Image 1 (tube, rainbow, N blue to C red):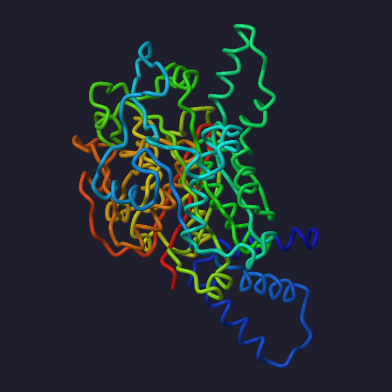
Image 2 (cartoon, rainbow, N blue to C red):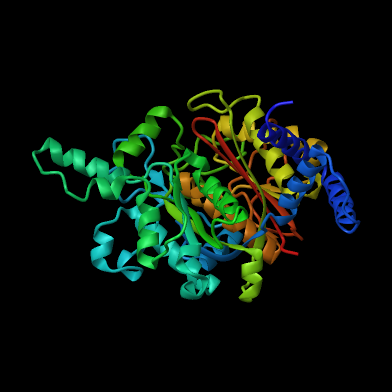
Length: 466
């Protein structure tokens, strides 16, 4: 029979895989039993009652604030407007000398002054990815109108995602060593990946749960998903969750060029990122940050918060296939999609829009299209799909968080942003990618995909709050 923990685990797994209708019926039956006089119960019945009590008590998590720093703009409103207009934030690289490389374009954040968001002394001790996180957190907290003292600062946590951390600090330090310069005492405490989360906690005096995930291009989505789980289990009332990246260093550019993963459309930067298009030739490196305020629903309602949307489901899986290449059979990605939908209690037919990973590489876009078909079947041809990266490039660890923000805004405004630069259909990518022009639509449920190096898959399901 196994231990009690094993039996509970088996029962939980069985229940998780039931359809939403069956789970709803079981909850109703349990409610009826609760109203009857108690009688002797078997161990199995007690286990079932205990598990359903936990299911009913699972906290709902809503989005109450948004913040962003992107190649399109330094805030959410202008970034969203740029996406709806189909504008590209991709241009020629200015931060480093890229003249000797086959790729000389990127999505750089323009006009960012750290001192607009924090003390100059604090800013000097941060890498750019940490500065972005502090800036986006400021906008998100202000948008949520949180009184941190009233909430209780021990009840507010931070969970950040980043793929690389302080790459430019490492490059600068190594260059200095080669000419005999001393290493800065601040080097290690600026470049390590968890510093973005630290600085957000430090500047806003947030004393609750704190963590950083570094799951490559899935990190931003996974940070949002794991922050949701922190609230679900009661370890925080509010979480600042997001992803941030600034890896536009020469060593990063050289590495990606060596992997032959980047677009080389240097003469036409705005048309370089072209997910799902037959003539796509690679992704475009970008920098930026997305930040969400996630909140226990009861807490949000009690303080009269504005609710953008609800995090309905989340999953993370591994392809267990290759260090860099996606699984051509798309099994890991499909499993992540399926498990996220199951966690949300929705079916493929309930999904109104898919915000794709959509990087613009030949292999990734083909794999993602196949994964969607595996899960959605014929419904795959009816659900709109679009790629935010077609306009802002690939923010690596920041991408999934910005795209989660986009999902919430899509639900709020009833408009799906386009996939720009989609001109020549690819027979292997034959879904509705909302080409080039935004589309009005009633959107209640959104699936957001993030697939990273090392077979890291993370999916979120975001829904209209009801």
